[in-house]
Length: 162
Image (cartoon, rainbow, N blue to C red; front, side, top):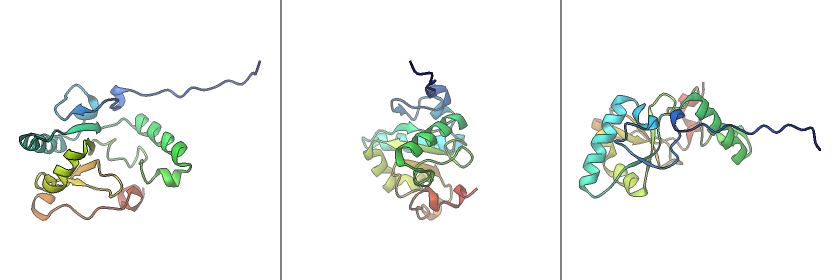
């Protein structure tokens, strides 16, 4: 028998912001939705109501996350992509993640993202990263000026350079 002790990673759940199954943008019982910045959540819900009138449903695949959950996602990304540098193209640190602060939401399905590509700026909802078509953040100035140019990926975003 081996004397090696294996450490099984603990998986953090819904209370930390995990969204195992997509949820409605109106789900106040899911921390990933309920803990979003109130202005982001308001814009998201207004857009979702208008999109529903066009037959398009929004679902949340990710939103607010605890620092612990963000750390877990980053570790998984490093494992998946083989390096911290490559993982940074997809997952931010807990200190830089807009998800941890409640300022970002990951949306689906593709019909919702297509609807937001056309109408999102009118609500201040902008896609931030070209490689993450699901990731939206609130940019209130977009209502009048349109969404800012996207970063290729998070490594090009100055907010990540902390």
